[in-house]
Amino acid sequence: MTTETESVPEVLYDVSDSVAKITFNRPERQNTISPSMLDDLTARLVEADKDPEVRAVILTGSGRFFCAGLDLRGGLGIGGGAAATDLDLRNAPPTVIHAMGKPTIAALNGSAAGYGMDMALGCDIRIMARSAKLAAAFTARGIVPESGGTWILPRLIGWAKASELIFTGKTLTAEECLEERLCNHVVDDGDCLEAAREIALEIARNAPLAVQASKKMMRMGLNETFPDHVHHVFLQLLPLMRTQDFKEGMSAFMEKRPAEFEGK
Image 1 (cartoon, one colour):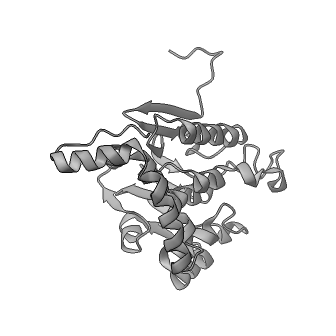
Image 2: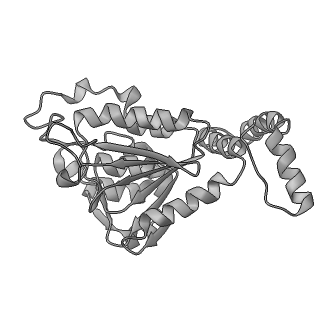
Image 3: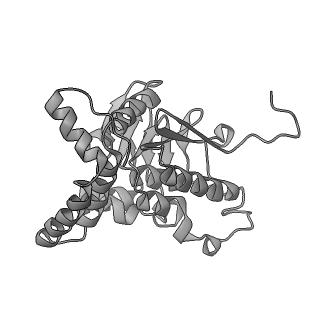
């Protein structure tokens, strides 16, 4: 039981079966991000990415919301002491998420808005509860998608669709997100985290070095010509073929058994 002198962590972190779960834990404030949460969240993301035991990372929220954005009343905006220019964008969670080598999955147990939406879109895979929504309310608040949305959205859904969503500040239902390919799956409320975990465990069963190299190549491919990209993929393939995991993968295939990868 939590005593009056103890504070409830605003970011929860646990690892099981090679899957790290990071949970926004301010349900009473719709999991809006407080100043202290920014540093804590970044630290947990970096910890998961560096931990050799972690092979996939899930981001989710406690309660009814995934994340309703920055806490504009608690120190990151209206009435607060931290101005937008005080934010360290190099170490901000969306930037760290984009740079992570480990696969990331957003389990949208509830709605995501603003900063929360950008963090979800920055993940590699998104699973949405049926009642969840994505709210691109930036222009309605007099700002731009400050944490990567203007870079991510055109690449996910094309220029025209991204323009409509950002300029109008529209809110999309889970089914609309699925139709626009902004999420991978829509599941019943209450099943979101389990669905995300099933995918994470499936990822974790594969060779972690190969999974991370594949993600790296996909990121690089966003800004490369095809000939350059094929060359870089070949250079990435050579060290992988010298790993124990490559030998295990080939042996498991020939012996018709599940592979047991160690990330070496």
